[in-house]
Amino acid sequence: MATEEENVGNVKRQLAKLFESSLRAIVPDEPDVEPLVAACTAKFGDYQCNNAMGLWSKIKGKGTEFRGPPSVGQAIMKSLPPSDIIESCSVAGPGFVNVVLSKTWMAKSIQKMLLDGIEKWAPQLAIKRAVVDFSSPNIAKEMHVGHLRSTIIGDTLARMLEYSNVEVLRRNHVGDWGTQFGMLIEFLFESFPNSEDVSETAIGDLQGFYKASKQRFDSDAAFKERAQQAVVRLQGGESKYRKAWAQICEISRKEFDRVYQCLGVQLEEKGESFYNPYIPGVIKALSDQGLIEESEGAHVIFIEGFNIPLIVVKSDGGYNYASTDLTALWYRLNEEKAEWIIYVTDVGQQQHFDMFFKAAKRAGWLPADDSAYPKVSHVGFGLVLGEDGKRFRTRNTEVVRLVDLLDEAKNRSKATLVERGKAEEWTEEELEKTAEAVGYGAVKYADLKNNRLTNYTFDFDQMLNDKGNTAVYLLYAHARICSIIRKSGKDIEELKKTGEIVLDHAGERELGLHLLQFSEVVEEACTNLLPNVLCEYLYNLSEIFTKKFYSNCQVVGSPEETSRLLLCEATATVMRKCFYLLGIVPVYKI
Ligand code: ARG
Image (cartoon, rainbow, N blue to C red; front, side, top):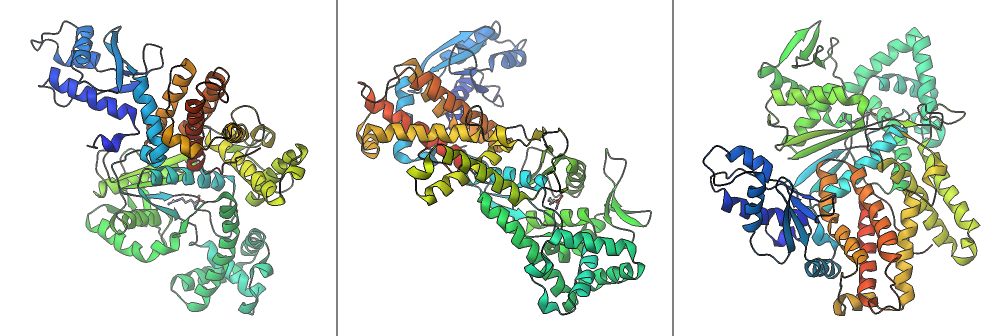
């Protein structure tokens, strides 16, 4: 159990501790009852404890002194230990205990965050190390918008975990192994008999190279034969083949890196090939456990609830996607000692993950209880659609080049800035940096704000709109807050030390409450693997700031100026942390 000091950011958890002690006092014979505390949606209070009903059904008929849920609620309320967090409590309806937070405590907590830094509001997770397996494109094949989604979502999840003090192994599980390499290598030998000629410029576009070699493979039986031989020689480790393979991988890698650089995403490549040497050992161990059976010449694991078994060794003796994934999981659990392994791919791969997760459970690698650690999670996401409602494609090519997409977002946002006269006002570098922050931020946010399971439409006009729930709107809102502070002419660092926050006005209090909910929202977004929860929080923060606080509470020149400037600073600080967690670079002026 975390200590009070560790819980500083999480109001919900601090209240839960108080309710826990109350529950222990009123029903000492029910030590398993966990406090149920949630933020209120109604206006009766800020938070609510919802234990009374459930508890009543547990204890009624057991000779209890209580007469029903409301009297249980009353007892819970009366037994709360004294605390400066709570202003007042009341019991409503069938026993809900509503809590109104103390304004003084709220103000102090925000002020403390400003002084000690927002790192103190980091969520607390029960694990120390996680693997996030994301992006993971396939060598020589298209890196499509699905991989873009995986890259964006995976990076955000990794950032949220890292903020929560979890060590994250950011894994790029690239498809760098498999039968397609035989064909590619053979075609490479044909096209460049002198292997020194092979360079990025020589091959030009690797996807075109892939297509051409595939054509050759499909139309020429002798070539096909050689390609199949090449796979065997590559897998057997023949150096000429390994070298050609490495060259092809390197060219792909350079292209992927351009996308990662634009997006500011860090990844460490451990591709499928990395796990290859470990596969036989893992298969043998599973086989020794009696889990592997023979079926139509293949080696398979039967899994409850599925009509088809999981194939782990193909009938030709080769390994497949599942053999690699099982082995990678084994490696991550045993060699890397990861406690939570998260895979980010489109929902189309759900069944593959369900199956090998179940196989791992059968093997006893994972606990039967899904919520216990070590744990595996598949983070699925929907399709990206074009404006025609179909799978996203550009006009003339079948695939969308991701770098082009990001460039276009940047160019469009630059054009808007130029239209607004920023080319005269700013240096070229400022213009460039802002256009990047806004353009790339817009692409990321448009993806992250939806529940990841739904399909979404890729629409530049919509994502680059400066109104509505877009990164542009949010980045501008942040820049405006910074400009309020700048224009006040006050030294905000000094105010943090000497000034005092007061939350007397309803607008100030509402803003303060929302700020204080940051930590529990990040924790929810992180534990449920839902970045959209954080986006919604950020959007609401901006709305509350503008509509509830700023339009009702004069900042500069008012008697409350110091306190209100500190609230502006706290809002900007929390917004920046949200941007950071979403992989968006903040802008300070606009
Ligand atoms: N390379 C795969 C694809 O493009 C994604 C790999 C995801 N990670 C994994 N461990 N299976 O679909």
